[in-house]
View 1 (cartoon, rainbow over the protein chains, first blue to last red):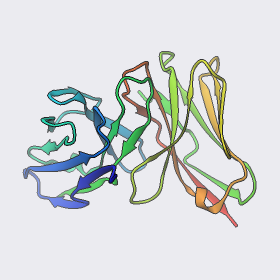
View 2 (cartoon, rainbow over the protein chains, first blue to last red; view 1 turned 30 degrees about the vertical axis):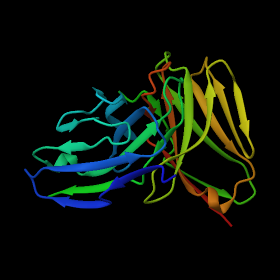
View 3 (spheres, rainbow over the protein chains, first blue to last red; view 1 turned 90 degrees about the horizontal axis):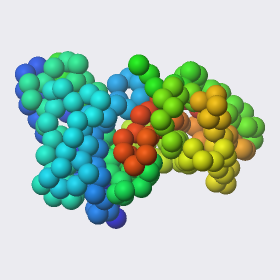
Length: 114
Length: 112
C-alpha cells in the first residue's frame, strides 16, 4: 500500500492564481481530511469528508473548495490564491465510525503564494 | 481560542533518559486524545492514544497519562533514543467526529 499520496510536493503561486492539490489514498478509508500547518503552529482542519459525495467545513475553510467523487480521491482547490494561504498542506484519511481513530497523513504539499 | 495547548515549544533530553511532553486542553467535551510524531518534510505519524475512560496507556517505550480533572495529558518516552528527535503533536477529538484539534507541537531533541 502506498498509503496517502499528495501531489505536488512543492508549488509557488502568484497572487490570484488557482490550483488544485491532489490527494489519493489506497486504504479504502471513508474519512478524508485536509489540514494546513503554518510555521510554529499546529495543524488546522480545512475541510473533511466522511464518504464519497459528502464534504463539510472544518476550522479554516475560507478560500478553499473540495470535492469527493470517489473513495480514493479528495482534491483541494484554491481559488484566487492569497499570501495568507502560504502554508504546508496535509491530507489524511482514517477508518470510519470509531471515536478518535488514527489518521494516516500524506507527506504534505508546501505552497508559497507571492 | 487554542483548545489544545503545548506550552513547551522545545525540549532537549540526553539519550537514555526520560522525555516528558505535556499537553493541556480546555474543552471538557474532548474524550479521546492522540499523540503524533512528525519528522521534517514528512507528514505526522500516529504514536499512541488514550480514551477518557482511562488514565494511562502504554505501548513499548511510550506511555500516555491522562488527568481529566486537570485537563492535562503527558507523553513519557523511556528510554529516549536519538531517533525520537522530532516534533510531537498532541491532538484531541470529541466522540465519533474524528475531527482532530491539534496543539502547536513540542520539538524534542535527544542528544548523545
